Length: 259
Ligand SMILES: [Zn+2]
Ligand SMILES: [Zn+2]
Ligand SMILES: [Zn+2]
Image (cartoon, rainbow, N blue to C red; front, side):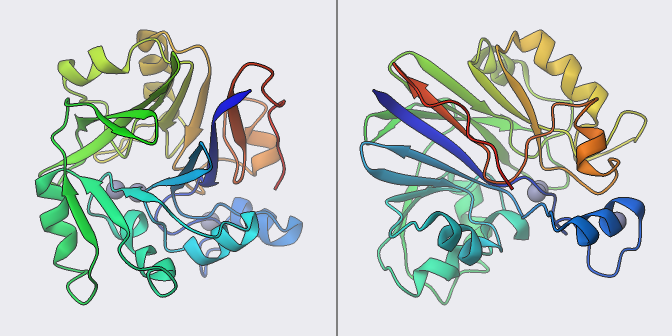
């Protein structure tokens, strides 16, 4: 029985791919072949419940695509537009959604969400909490200039999924310890190696981190148009794609993969 299903609703960086107005090879390829990378959000399904990690500005089309009727909980990783701005998309059809994050991230996002009411639940990083049988633990990452940003560990029945969140390579040691030995690691790798980045990791840094963490399976997320067109880049890098899903539990379905 499948105990948990994790679906990547969006694997893009903040402008998404194709980037509006960009004529680079990758953006042109995306237009020509009809693929795209929506903004970042992950859907965790367990016991008939839907948990969202981040609420991307592409939320409406992402939820319609999967025919998701309701959201049972939201977790915000940090206060960047591409991670929270889509909250209003289902707020219109559903009220009293509970949102989990650290006090600092809640406070920062509340400045933008002052016209909405939602149940704000403050959780401390490194202190696990339960959501519908799933154990969630936030940890701190480093995403300047933000004062606080998080990744998270998602666990159920011995399965461990680690989501790095938006981070540069300077992840605190306490977080590294928590990120070890994942069955699936979804890691920020916004650009190929060689790009020097302050806020994110490049592919080389992401690979180095994955090895250190001894993850069984690794996919790059939060991808920018800096990579070659997807079908070419995917031969060299473990790039995830939108709506890719992973199931955990006995007799799990095969990985479903489609655009
Ligand atoms: Zn982001
Ligand atoms: Zn481009
Ligand atoms: Zn960010």
